[in-house]
Image (cartoon, rainbow, N blue to C red):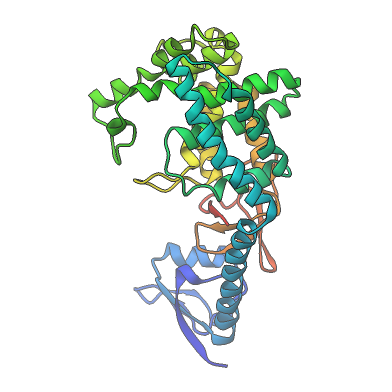
Length: 364
C-alpha cells in the first residue's frame, strides 16, 4: 500500500501512519502503523511536526468523504433555499422589510399606525413557516445576504422576540406587543446619519457617542404614540445591561424593564451572528461561548440561560465544521456545557467538553 505525505492539520482519527514520526532533534514521537486518534494527533502537533506520512488509501478515503460531505452541505443549503417553506419565509421577510419602512415612515410622519397589524401578521406567518427554533434559525441564516443594520436586523429581532415570548408561554396579546417591541427597538437610528450607521469599520469615539443617542431618540419618537409602554421602554433600554455597564443611563438590573431585557438578548444575538459588509457573522456557538464567560452578569440570567439552552439544543443533529477542519454531526449537548457538544466525525466521537482546544467553527 502506498504512503502519502499530508499536512498534520489534515490528519483525522482512523488514519494509519506510514512512517515513524520524529522531532527535529530526531526523537521518536510515534511509530509506524499507529492508528491515529485525537491524542496522538495533538501529541504530534505539540512537537511542532507539520507533516506526516499516512497510508494513501486512508488519505484517499478521507478526502473522498470530505468531498461528499462538502457536496451534502451545498445540497442542504440549496434544498432549503428552494423549499416551499423558505420561499414563503423569504416572501414574508421581504414584505416585512417594506412594511417596517412604511410603519417607521408613518410613525415619524405622525400619520397613523395602520401598517402595524399587517406587519405583525407577516412576522407571525414567518414563525408558522418555520417548523421550530432550528428551522427558523436556519432560514434566518439563509437571509444573511441582507447587509442592513436597521430594517432587516429589526425584522430578525422581532422574530426572535416572538420566539422567546412563545418559550415563555406569553398570551397572544403580549406576544404581539413583544414582537412589536423587537421591531421598533432601533427606530431612533433613523435620526442618525446613515454614514455613521452603515460605516464599514470601527467608529471613532465621537461617532460612537452619536450612536449611543439612538435609544433616547427612539423613545422620544414613540413616547406620544399609542403603543404599550413596554414597547417604548424597549427602544429606550435595549442597550442597558444588568451590571450597570450599558447606556444611556447605566441602569442596574432592577431598574430595567423585563421586555427590554428580552429585546437586548435578541438584539445582540442577531447583531453578532449576522454578516456585515466589513465582517462575517459569528457562529452561534461562538456567541454562546462569549455569553457563557461573561453574559450572566450583563443579561438577565434566567432569560439568557433559556435562550442559550433553546438555541444550543436546536442544533442537535446539525452538521458542523470544527476548528481543526473536520466535519461532523452534533449528537448531544451536556446541560452544564452548552457550547461543548459531543460531535460524531465518521465512526469516531469528539467530546468538545474534554477537548477544549477544539471549537465549533461553523454550522453548515
